[in-house]
Amino acid sequence: MLIRHRKSSDVASREITPESVYLNRRNFLSVASGAAIALTAGERSARAAGLPASGAAFANVKPGYAKLGEDDAVTPHESATTYNNYYEFAQGKDQPAKLAHTFKPLPWKVAVDGLCAKPGTLELDAFLQPHDLEERIYRLRCVEGWSMVIPWVGISLAEVVRRFEPLGSAKYLRLETVHRPEELPGQRGDMLIWPYVEGLRLDEATNPLAILAVGMYGKVLPGQSGAPIRLVVPWKYGFKSVKSIVRLSFTEEAPHNTWAIKRPDEYGFYANVNPLVDHPRHTQATERRIGDGGKFFGLIEERRPTLMLNGYEEEVAHLYSDLDLRKNF
Ligand code: MTE
Image (spheres, helix red, strand yellow):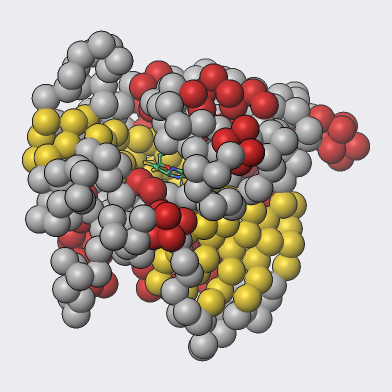
């Protein structure tokens, strides 16, 4: 099965999870709210409004898929958590990390609705509970022309989709970010239409590579990275990987995704990484790997060729065999 595939060049999960204290999935909410392990239900809910504790790490994370090339070093944690796109905070890459303290990722509920047999609104721990946490080390390629290699901790989106039993008429999954202008200053402006929305075809959502991440580098996701739960679809440009998800909806029609609404001439629904199709303002033939040049804010990283489907052709190219990817960008 794809997600077990590893090469000798792959990065072992223990090499990128240095924390000495490990907590298991059942302690997720306790960890995320900065509480100790053995809390009563009352104590847990009382603390659930707090912010994620930095340094809180997961245990019982199964090593998962990590097909990396020789020159795919894991991006330094510092770079991945201080160079972010999260317009609900602000536009500057360094701003989400500086403003994330305003955002309360817990308590959190996820609603699942639309064309499915088992809709419902679940507390985050109930939403995660049936699923195994896996580590997935993926390349992340932004349409702006930069990339990273990030070790995520997440659950299989395919399993989540199957659990809520989509009806035969369901063809797409729509994913929606939280809308809280009081905590997310960017949402007080009109840079984008809020809430941020993304979508996948159901066969994309059930591809084994697609995950919902709740952690990175073995630890709970920080606010700027999409706490407490975000999508990761590594063969697509980063803007598809919607952050801080509150709603999953099964639909018959393709959801109108935020960037395609904002600039339909520049962004489409598919957003598959494709070095042969340039964005009007950014070449897609090459990319710069954040962290390659040492201090990424100072030096310009050397550009490297961008891989078709971000290097995941073997896993996902069959999904697009009957599509013209120049038209369906
Ligand atoms: N999700 C929301 N809700 N808001 C955003 O602004 N930015 C997207 C995506 N998900 C974004 C979002 C873009 S453009 C990218 S490249 C990735 O998140 C960046 O993820 P990272 O900051 O963890 O690297």
